Image (cartoon, rainbow, N blue to C red; front, side, top):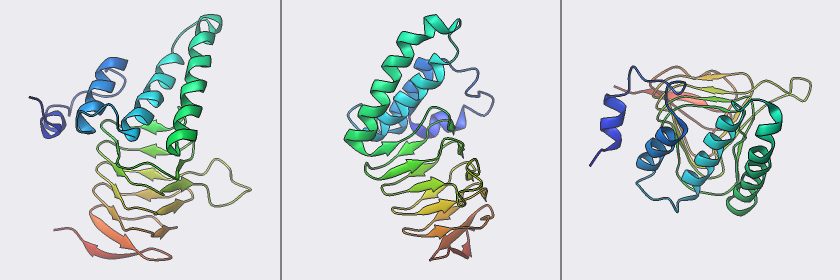
Amino acid sequence: MVTQQDLITNSTLVTNNTLGLWQQIKEDWIAHGCDWTRPGFRAVAVHRFGVWRMKIEPKILRAPFSILYRSLYRKVRNTYGIELPYTVELGRRVVIEHQGAIVIHGDCTIGDDCIIRQGVTLGNRYLERPFDAPKLGNCVNVGAGAKIFGNISIGDRANIGANAVVLINIPPETTAVGIPAKVIANRK
Protein backbone atom coordinates (compact mmCIF):
# COMPACT_ATOMS: atom_id res chain seq x y z
CA MET A 1 0.00 0.00 0.00
CA VAL A 2 1.23 3.51 -0.85
CA THR A 3 1.65 5.78 2.16
CA GLN A 4 1.57 9.56 2.34
CA GLN A 5 5.32 9.57 3.07
CA ASP A 6 5.93 7.58 -0.13
CA LEU A 7 4.01 10.20 -2.08
CA ILE A 8 6.02 13.03 -0.52
CA THR A 9 9.34 11.28 -1.16
CA ASN A 10 8.57 10.37 -4.77
CA SER A 11 6.92 13.62 -5.81
CA THR A 12 9.72 16.16 -5.92
CA LEU A 13 9.65 16.42 -9.70
CA VAL A 14 5.87 16.28 -10.18
CA THR A 15 3.78 19.42 -9.98
CA ASN A 16 0.03 20.05 -9.93
CA ASN A 17 0.21 21.09 -13.59
CA THR A 18 1.40 17.64 -14.69
CA LEU A 19 -1.06 15.63 -12.60
CA GLY A 20 -4.49 14.89 -13.94
CA LEU A 21 -7.67 15.45 -11.94
CA TRP A 22 -7.97 11.81 -10.86
CA GLN A 23 -4.30 11.58 -9.89
CA GLN A 24 -4.66 14.65 -7.66
CA ILE A 25 -7.83 13.30 -6.09
CA LYS A 26 -6.14 9.93 -5.46
CA GLU A 27 -3.23 11.69 -3.71
CA ASP A 28 -5.67 13.73 -1.63
CA TRP A 29 -7.63 10.58 -0.75
CA ILE A 30 -4.44 8.90 0.53
CA ALA A 31 -3.47 12.07 2.44
CA HIS A 32 -6.91 12.04 4.11
CA GLY A 33 -6.42 8.46 5.35
CA CYS A 34 -8.17 6.74 2.41
CA ASP A 35 -11.53 7.86 3.80
CA TRP A 36 -13.80 9.43 1.16
CA THR A 37 -16.36 10.34 3.84
CA ARG A 38 -14.10 12.94 5.47
CA PRO A 39 -15.45 16.47 4.86
CA GLY A 40 -11.93 17.81 4.26
CA PHE A 41 -11.35 15.32 1.46
CA ARG A 42 -14.69 16.22 -0.11
CA ALA A 43 -13.88 19.95 0.04
CA VAL A 44 -10.47 19.43 -1.58
CA ALA A 45 -11.96 17.14 -4.26
CA VAL A 46 -14.59 19.77 -5.15
CA HIS A 47 -11.81 22.38 -5.32
CA ARG A 48 -9.79 20.17 -7.68
CA PHE A 49 -12.87 19.67 -9.86
CA GLY A 50 -13.46 23.44 -9.93
CA VAL A 51 -9.91 24.09 -11.13
CA TRP A 52 -10.12 21.30 -13.72
CA ARG A 53 -13.37 22.55 -15.24
CA MET A 54 -11.82 25.97 -15.92
CA LYS A 55 -9.53 24.30 -18.47
CA ILE A 56 -12.51 23.32 -20.65
CA GLU A 57 -12.84 25.45 -23.77
CA PRO A 58 -15.07 26.88 -25.22
CA LYS A 59 -17.06 28.38 -22.38
CA ILE A 60 -20.34 26.85 -23.60
CA LEU A 61 -18.92 23.36 -23.04
CA ARG A 62 -17.76 24.39 -19.57
CA ALA A 63 -21.21 25.65 -18.51
CA PRO A 64 -22.70 22.33 -17.28
CA PHE A 65 -19.52 21.60 -15.29
CA SER A 66 -19.67 25.10 -13.79
CA ILE A 67 -23.25 24.54 -12.66
CA LEU A 68 -22.23 21.23 -11.08
CA TYR A 69 -19.19 22.84 -9.42
CA ARG A 70 -21.25 25.68 -7.93
CA SER A 71 -23.75 23.20 -6.53
CA LEU A 72 -21.03 21.02 -5.00
CA TYR A 73 -19.17 24.08 -3.62
CA ARG A 74 -22.30 25.36 -1.90
CA LYS A 75 -23.11 21.89 -0.56
CA VAL A 76 -19.63 21.58 1.01
CA ARG A 77 -19.75 25.14 2.35
CA ASN A 78 -23.24 24.86 3.83
CA THR A 79 -23.01 21.28 5.11
CA TYR A 80 -19.44 21.16 6.40
CA GLY A 81 -18.58 24.82 6.89
CA ILE A 82 -15.53 24.66 4.63
CA GLU A 83 -15.20 27.59 2.22
CA LEU A 84 -12.49 26.69 -0.32
CA PRO A 85 -13.04 28.46 -3.67
CA TYR A 86 -11.46 27.13 -6.86
CA THR A 87 -9.35 30.31 -7.18
CA VAL A 88 -7.19 29.27 -4.19
CA GLU A 89 -3.78 28.05 -5.33
CA LEU A 90 -3.81 24.74 -3.49
CA GLY A 91 -0.71 22.57 -3.23
CA ARG A 92 -0.55 18.80 -3.26
CA ARG A 93 -1.79 16.59 -0.40
CA VAL A 94 -3.28 19.46 1.61
CA VAL A 95 -5.26 18.01 4.51
CA ILE A 96 -8.28 19.72 6.00
CA GLU A 97 -8.33 17.88 9.29
CA HIS A 98 -11.75 18.78 10.67
CA GLN A 99 -14.87 20.53 9.48
CA GLY A 100 -16.47 23.76 10.62
CA ALA A 101 -15.87 27.49 10.23
CA ILE A 102 -12.98 27.20 7.76
CA VAL A 103 -12.81 30.26 5.51
CA ILE A 104 -10.07 30.58 2.90
CA HIS A 105 -9.71 33.75 0.81
CA GLY A 106 -9.88 33.11 -2.92
CA ASP A 107 -6.43 34.63 -3.51
CA CYS A 108 -4.59 32.49 -0.93
CA THR A 109 -1.69 30.25 -1.81
CA ILE A 110 -1.31 27.05 0.20
CA GLY A 111 1.80 24.90 -0.29
CA ASP A 112 2.16 21.13 -0.41
CA ASP A 113 1.47 18.89 2.59
CA CYS A 114 -0.15 21.58 4.78
CA ILE A 115 -2.62 20.73 7.53
CA ILE A 116 -5.56 23.04 8.25
CA ARG A 117 -7.84 22.47 11.22
CA GLN A 118 -11.32 23.67 12.21
CA GLY A 119 -12.08 27.33 12.73
CA VAL A 120 -9.19 28.58 10.59
CA THR A 121 -9.52 31.81 8.63
CA LEU A 122 -7.07 32.82 5.91
CA GLY A 123 -8.18 36.24 4.75
CA ASN A 124 -7.49 39.85 3.94
CA ARG A 125 -6.76 42.37 6.68
CA TYR A 126 -7.95 45.69 5.23
CA LEU A 127 -11.15 46.45 3.32
CA GLU A 128 -9.31 48.81 0.97
CA ARG A 129 -6.98 45.93 -0.08
CA PRO A 130 -9.40 43.10 -0.89
CA PHE A 131 -6.89 40.98 -2.84
CA ASP A 132 -4.28 40.74 -0.08
CA ALA A 133 -4.18 37.15 1.10
CA PRO A 134 -1.77 34.91 3.03
CA LYS A 135 0.73 32.59 1.37
CA LEU A 136 1.52 29.36 3.20
CA GLY A 137 4.72 27.49 2.41
CA ASN A 138 5.07 23.71 2.32
CA CYS A 139 4.31 21.52 5.35
CA VAL A 140 2.68 24.32 7.37
CA ASN A 141 0.67 23.12 10.36
CA VAL A 142 -2.22 25.50 11.17
CA GLY A 143 -3.82 24.97 14.58
CA ALA A 144 -7.53 25.07 15.36
CA GLY A 145 -9.07 28.53 15.40
CA ALA A 146 -6.01 30.28 13.97
CA LYS A 147 -6.57 33.47 11.99
CA ILE A 148 -4.01 34.53 9.37
CA PHE A 149 -4.67 37.96 7.85
CA GLY A 150 -3.15 40.08 5.10
CA ASN A 151 -0.48 39.80 2.47
CA ILE A 152 1.93 37.79 4.61
CA SER A 153 4.01 34.66 4.16
CA ILE A 154 4.22 31.66 6.42
CA GLY A 155 7.52 29.83 5.90
CA ASP A 156 7.98 26.14 5.14
CA ARG A 157 7.42 23.75 8.05
CA ALA A 158 6.12 26.51 10.34
CA ASN A 159 3.61 25.77 13.10
CA ILE A 160 0.78 28.18 13.83
CA GLY A 161 -0.65 27.63 17.29
CA ALA A 162 -4.32 27.20 18.10
CA ASN A 163 -6.25 30.48 18.19
CA ALA A 164 -3.21 32.50 17.09
CA VAL A 165 -3.88 35.73 15.19
CA VAL A 166 -1.07 36.07 12.66
CA LEU A 167 -0.46 39.53 11.21
CA ILE A 168 3.27 39.27 10.38
CA ASN A 169 5.50 37.07 8.23
CA ILE A 170 6.51 33.86 10.00
CA PRO A 171 9.97 32.46 9.18
CA PRO A 172 10.45 28.83 8.11
CA GLU A 173 10.68 26.12 10.77
CA THR A 174 9.34 28.27 13.60
CA THR A 175 6.32 28.21 15.88
CA ALA A 176 4.02 31.21 16.30
CA VAL A 177 1.42 31.59 19.06
CA GLY A 178 -0.64 34.29 20.71
CA ILE A 179 -2.77 37.31 19.93
CA PRO A 180 -1.12 38.90 18.03
CA ALA A 181 1.10 35.96 17.15
CA LYS A 182 4.77 36.01 18.07
CA VAL A 183 7.49 33.56 17.11
CA ILE A 184 8.40 31.54 20.20
CA ALA A 185 10.63 28.73 18.98
CA ASN A 186 12.72 27.38 16.14
CA ARG A 187 12.27 23.75 15.15
CA LYS A 188 15.47 21.78 15.41
